[in-house]
Each structure stands twice: as C-alpha cells, then as structure tokens.
Image (tube, rainbow, N blue to C red; front, side, top):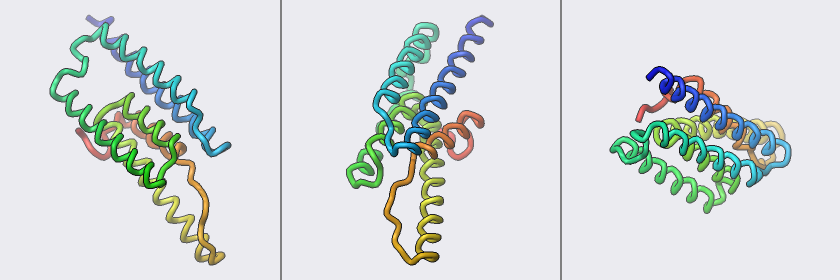
Length: 170
C-alpha cells in the first residue's frame, strides 16, 4: 500500500516537472523567436500521455469516468473553445493556444483554470503598463506582441507550488 502511495506522489511530481519543463522551454523560445515550436508541445503531449497510461494502469479508479472527472473534462472543453475563439479574433497566437491546450491536458479542471486566469491577468497588467508607458512617454501607439508563454510558465510555477488552490477550487 505504501509503495503505491509513493508511486502516486512520483506521478504527481513527474506531471508537475513535465508541465514546468515544457512551459519553460516554450517561454524561452517565445522570448527569443516569438514562436512556440510544435515539436516541443507535441513532446509534452506524448510524455503526458505516457504518464496518464502509467497512472491508469496503477490507479484505474482515476480514469475519467467519475462525475468529478467528467466535470473537469467539461471545464477543459469550455477552456479550449474560449481559447479557439480568442485565436480566431487574433487576440492570441496558435502556439499560445497549443500551449494552453497542453496545460489543460496535463491538469484538467480547476488547476488549468487557475493557470489560464493568472497568466492572462499578469499578461494583461504588463500589456496595459507597456501601453500606458509607451503612449505617455512617446505618444505612439504600441504595435507588437507579448510573449504569452512566459506568463503561462510563471502561472504554472505558481500553480505547482500552491497545488492550484490560489484562485478557484473546482
């Protein structure tokens, strides 16, 4: 019994590390090249799938058939639909959408909602500050992009440290 509890903890740690590694690498590439490579996000999905399979084999009771998991899946679908709408309005890049989809895949439900809210709020505050500063100092409008992956990484780090219970508990 204790061995399985230790394995459950290891799976949680691997999921958290995978989330931080993938969002961290994407943050660096977004800062450097203003793009998020598909192969990095795809690798995250692949490794995340392996973690889910291992978890399902060891803990079949965690397979998303229970009501709370169905609710988490419903939230995840809603998140992805909202993100697709934001992309179609050109408010967000395709790489950001894929990275958010990875976050939702790794942690469906309230944890991913917290990551999305924190990353968008911090990005919004920074964008507003840059806009105000640029407009007040130079009188010019701001044309440019904001590396959203950096904020997704920061929000993921906060979520992992606090176990996701800092804004909304599902």
